[in-house]
Image (cartoon, rainbow, N blue to C red; front, side):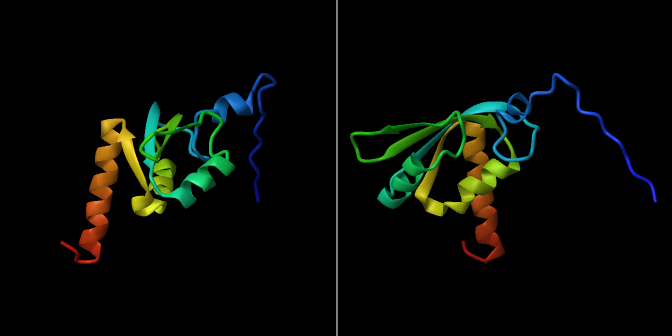
Length: 114
């Protein structure tokens, strides 16, 4: 049996390396993401949880909340957004919004929903 040996450089900063990641995947472009939350229960959860150090929450006059994040565009982010279903809407950037819409359509096709 053999074992690999890795040496972590002395100047390695894990906080810097993972700083813009949503989870453990550290690849993809860092983007500013804007999400709209309308559900009061979900807003409460968002206020009580630090999902990412970059998150900023803004309550709107219409009763919704905008969450702004500066994170990498990864499958982990998409899974998190999709996990909230209709409770969270991606506002920006347009390419992530589009990808979420296309994924939602594909899920509907799997279940034969038109």
